[in-house]
Structure formats: structure tokens, C-alpha cells
Image (cartoon, rainbow, N blue to C red; front, side):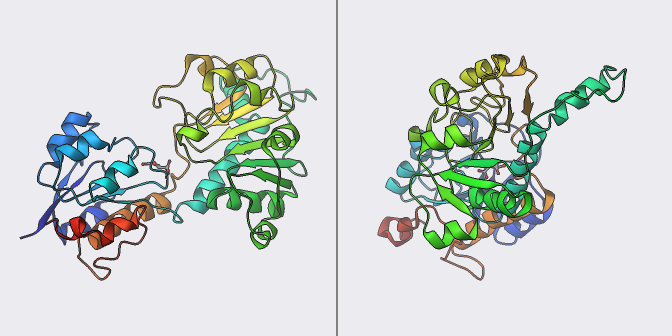
Length: 338
Ligand code: 8YV
């Protein structure tokens, strides 16, 4: 008999079809947003699930679904999942790294450029009929991007891909701060120089945040950090809401303490702080960093392939491609789960 699995959000039809080749699939094709009790109810009897960033996978849920073996999250970030709680209950977690790196770096760069060059602000002005005279020399002037200093907070795969774009495409000096300094060969590949956080904040003309969310990165950029930045600098956050203190940022933007910001992620999204909505020098997008068609497909397919392998099916049976807590795979309690 086939194992039963749940796909919690709508995805590409061929991904669901692939899963149907191996499992009895319950599929949220209507893309309904479930509460946690609803999610728990739908997970009853399921050995695996393909989940997304809005599904909270914690001890309460795991205790209510003891037959679960694998959670295959669509997304490189997995701060929606309590990894320790998964591991303690012999539940495998997988994520979707690599396949989204270049697309998300493209987006981060685009958002930074839109922010610096005031693209949405000026479009809004035009659409609202504000453009009455041509050729004003100071109309929507903003800071340059090429030839300036790009500061990157968090230097994982996406940070490094952004660094390459800045260094090789735009002639930027690239500085970064990270929990640990990269190996010299990796720094050389993306022309990036390690600096302490104070130097990063002080010297960046364009600061881009790519650090994963964790309790230790909560409000890594707040009022004190914003106060250290140049008044001409921009800040772009494509990491996670909560890494930046949104209310402090709104104040800094309003007071022109920094020039502008570009935000794809928010504290408490899909809610956006009213303070941010009230300022004009900020570009706001609804968490679409990885949203190219090819990449979203690759992310969904990787999650599906992880689940197929985790539940001992397919060509990669027993060898999920991108496990977050691979130690689970060796536990007798994992192997004994039906
Ligand atoms: C996803 C993301 O769209 O990969 C991530 O961590 O933030 C996005 O690419 C999101 O997580 C969907 O679940």
C-alpha cells in the first residue's frame, strides 16, 4: 500500500503528478491558508509533507502527528521549522538550497538598484500625473550603484552571488560581514573583503542583508546600526523579516538618516508595518526573491524529490538530496517508523 503524504500549498501540476507516482497525495490545490490545528488535522496518517514558509512545524504539531517521517520544506530558509524538535522526534527536515541562489541574487540586485535609482517612487509620480515639465536636473536623483561600495551582511551562497554581480558587473568594491570569514580562495572568487560589522555599516554605500533569521540575528539592524550608516546609503533586505527592526528603519527613512530602503521581507508578513507604508523612500515587494518560474519549479521539484527519497522510493531511495538534519537518517527510531 502507498504511503500517504500532504502537499500544503499549491504548486506546479507536474510536481504533484510526480508525487502521485509514489504516494497517496492529499493536495491543497486551492492554496487555502490553514491554521495550525487545520494543518495537524490534515497531517493525520501522513508519513511526509511538502511544506512552505508559512507552515509552522513545531513540537506541538510533531507530537500530534507521531507517524511523520519527513518534512520537505520549499525554501532555503527554514525558520518556520523547529529543527531540534524534528530531530528529537526522528523527523527528517529538508530544504531547497542552491537551486534559488542565482535568481535570488538577481532579485536582490534589482531591488537594490530600484531603491538607489528610485524606480517605484518615480513611476508612482508619473502614474499619478505628477510629470508636468521635462528635464528638471534634480528630478528623482539618487545615489549611483556602479563604482560604489557594496556591503553584504551574511555571506552564504546568495551573498556570494550578489558579490560577484557587484564586483564584476558593476565595478563595485565589495565588503562583507559574516559569522565567520570566508577562505581566501572563496573571497578572491567574489572579490570580497571581510570587515567587522561597524566598518560594514560605516563604509557601505549600499547595504544588502542576506543573513538567515535566528534568535541571534533578530534585529541585527536596528536604530543603533542605522545610525552608523551614511546618510546617502541604501539598505536592502531580502533575508527574513525580523533581521531588520522595521519600525526603527521607517523612522530612519523618514528622518533621512539613510537615503532609501528596499524590502522584500517583513516582520509579521504578510502584514507590513504602517510606518513603512507611510514613507516614500522605500521599495516594497511581497517576498518574491526566488520567484522566477524556473526557480520556483526547481524548488518544488527538489522538495518533492527529497520526500520521495526520504520515504525510501525512487532512484535516490534512502538518500534525500538536501537534508538539514541528516543525523536522523541513522537513528534506529527513524528506521523503525513505518
Ligand atoms: C521562498 C524563501 O519563496 O527560500 C526561502 O527561504 O524565503 C523563498 O525563496 C519561501 O520560503 C516559500 O516557502
